[in-house]
Length: 110
Image (cartoon, rainbow, N blue to C red; front, side, top):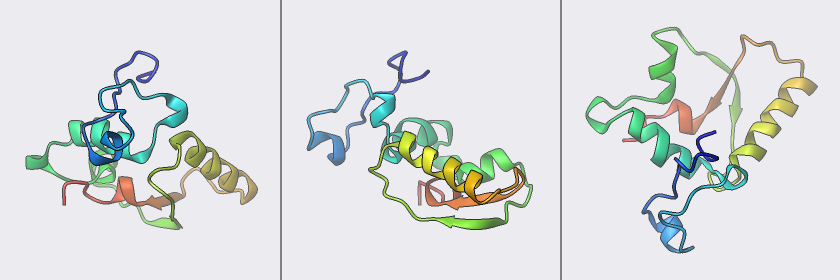
């Protein structure tokens, strides 16, 4: 919805400067972990109160993970999520099982 409304724009970072995309609306089909971090995570969690996304949303509840996810930050978020959904279905992963994903588990300010 944020993409459809034009609220997520490609940030002024080298990744986008190189492609002449700075300031243009990000498309859902092209949204990557780069945009997610720059445009959402770092805006919701300011540097002076830095923590990971997991620390913010877990509210102190232990988030021990059973799966470590390795991925490319430049891949489409849609494809990344589809892959996780497929993995969880094929392996009958319970809803209470966590995946460790660096963009969410690590403090993006440090």
